[in-house]
Image 1: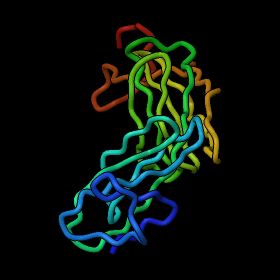
Image 2: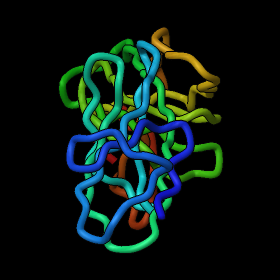
Image 3: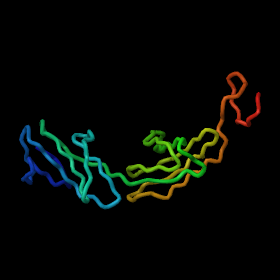
Image 4: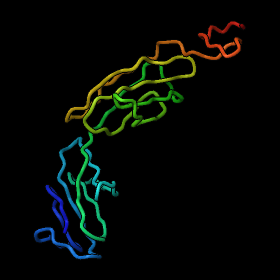
Length: 169
């Protein structure tokens, strides 16, 4: 049996009746999605390769038993780093600290599920403060992170830290 609520189900390319499948069947599930949204399709809680085209997310898998198909909706998130360059490290984490994106550059773009996040940027000599934002059912494309705080660097003090002033210590 295949549980796939809100999905169109095809077996070997033919529309399924009542989601009844046989062991070994090649099953394709299709989910309509609005523009600007992305979906990761999961079979039994594990992500499977999901293709997005023409307003539909699709995934194909082989039936090996009873399966449950679900999805996780995500939205486009992008922004710029004022004072950043191609070597700037950008990190996005959930509000409980789980890192969900790491990239480099003066701008970023990723897909995130609904939730609360914090984005930070770190350059060779400056860092940003944490910028909090929320994804709530829509794309978030206006984030601006400013690198204005001096980066703490090791100084000539054994096991010490200080602000890089360019002076020898």
